[in-house]
Image (cartoon, rainbow, N blue to C red; front, side, top):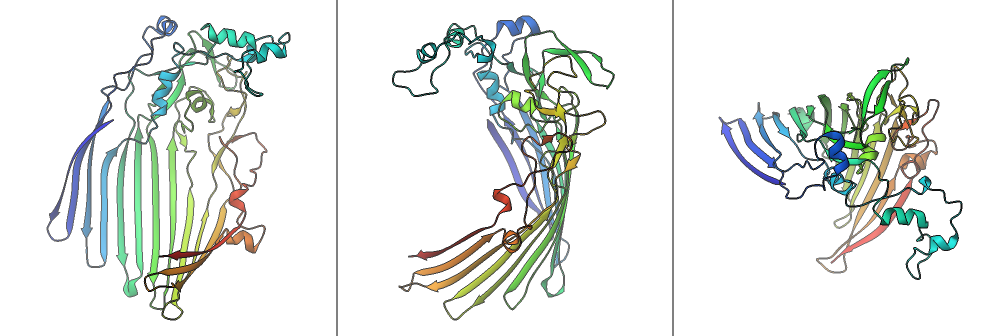
Length: 438
């Protein structure tokens, strides 16, 4: 990946500062996936597309305006890219089904396979688990393995990007009460997604589900969504420091974020099935897997010197946020699509009228405690401290407090399921220790 940019910062009068620039990112590669003749015969084009030469020009401009001695307004607009794991591109090299082969033991009748047959393929001195049934081993070693779907890149693939629009304000009231507010609006374009390219829709069943027929060799395509997903987040905060050593801050954030495919995994097949959908090949904008709609947070801290060399700090940190999105779905591996689109017997098919990530788990409320007492060292330049950390003080105070309940990955469950308690996040933990610096 290559990057060049030019940027300048300049003042407009005494109160306005502007930062503007251009950034250009582009990919280069001299390697391509091995051409698969079966893919070429079925699709009419090779599976060798890469991102070589693909680039994105990203203009950006931001400003800071000192409206007065106590009020600052800031904002900006820009195009951004990046953040998409390169493993999604490497899938097309590692799963071209030309340079490597795999086989699934469930495809073979192993009722006559003996223990000696299995152990014969194991390295000398290898322990249990190394042996492979001889028929499976032979299928792979002769290059005749039945692999998973070929992975390939859409020849018209565009680099995903996001337009971001930001506006914020900070105002200091009398006695140094500080209020901040920020608004961020994002438009996502050319979002990455995985499609099953081997099938064509031939109709619709009575419930509205698409009916598919498989007409080509199975292949998963990394392509772009045609939809524009939106995200908006707004936050407000209040902070104040007092002369007696006490300071605090409180805040609230609202987020409404969308995506087409959450792209939760590193493997194309996992990205294809680890989500909820009405149509496995749909290009539909829904609430993002990662959206937390409401979040309140606070910090309270007290600092005091207990003598000349005994500084004490006690802090409380807390948050309360709405739950994680999830989807009610059912196992649709065999029906209703009239083909098995490698959905792996998972609960990921939405019922008619349902939406992905329409429901959320319960709120989570938690508070943590931190205390630190400074101590004199044995030498003039040495220092020491003792500290105490209580993670999830709320749960220490009451067994029913500080409990996080969430559905496990990939956040698709059958109707009637209740979110289980998340163990590590729902229990208290106490740590204390001594630190000495010299």
